[in-house]
Image 1 (cartoon, one colour):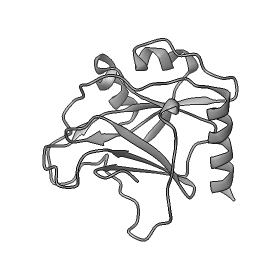
Image 2: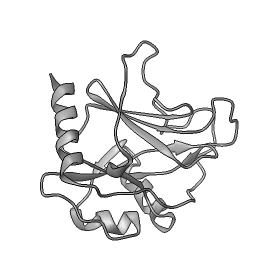
Image 3: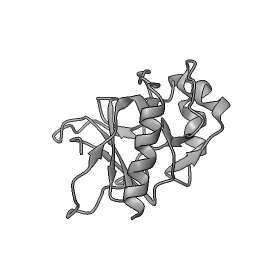
Image 4: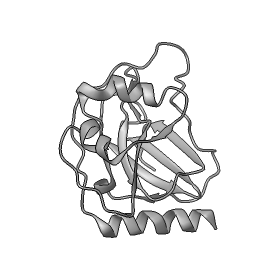
Length: 161
């Protein structure tokens, strides 16, 4: 039931806007170590993911990545004010009345492009890196426009959901 409400909320947001296009190219390197705390893959046996349009998410601008990382230090998603959306994205964005903006974790290796999908009552943020890419992980927060906070946020670097 919650998954259906989450999808309906996203659909309402998508229909209400045609707003965000991703931009930005740089991010800070992820903390060294065997496992990055930003990674949170979905369980191996999961259902089909429903990809969201790129219009509901954007990369945080390079000059604001460090600050966004602070918002996401302990949680994978953080609600921000409507006024902070354009600040973090680095360009003006008009929000629909029915949505709430968030910062959400993303990681990548060499491709700072992402797919964002709904997986049950969870959100899945995946970079479009190749599964064979062994470059170091980098953190890349995203601005996300949605109606409802997901129960779980999965974050992966590799093939899109």
